[in-house]
Length: 132
Image (tube, rainbow, N blue to C red; front, side):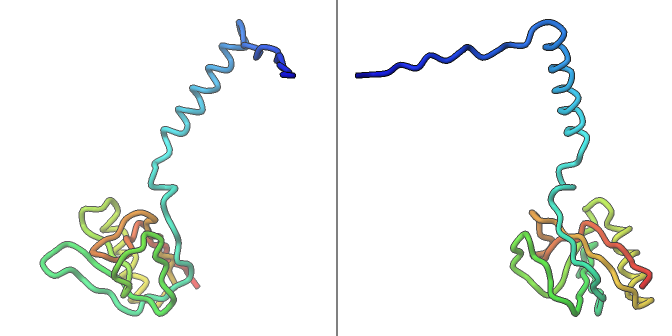
């Protein structure tokens, strides 16, 4: 004996209700489109002290070394510090913040990409200098 179950048809939206649902969907899509994708692809190394700053060999790049354990979400092959290249947006700001923190012995938060490496090292996408 085979039992066949009959389900009620799915209720469809009509009239103003359908228009509201479409507007909400478009608003949501528009809001998501304005959020940069890289903002979701980051990891922060909190409260680290910079022990060395390296500059590039015939290239516009720099790297920093810290005493704390590194974060390496992109599984980069070189683990002797974090790096940034001049072609990346914010490079000059990151470099200035790193120099300031190193010269004044301040604690920093280093934000690195979850998906990209720079010169084989975790790629710096942000530096926050802390007052204490």
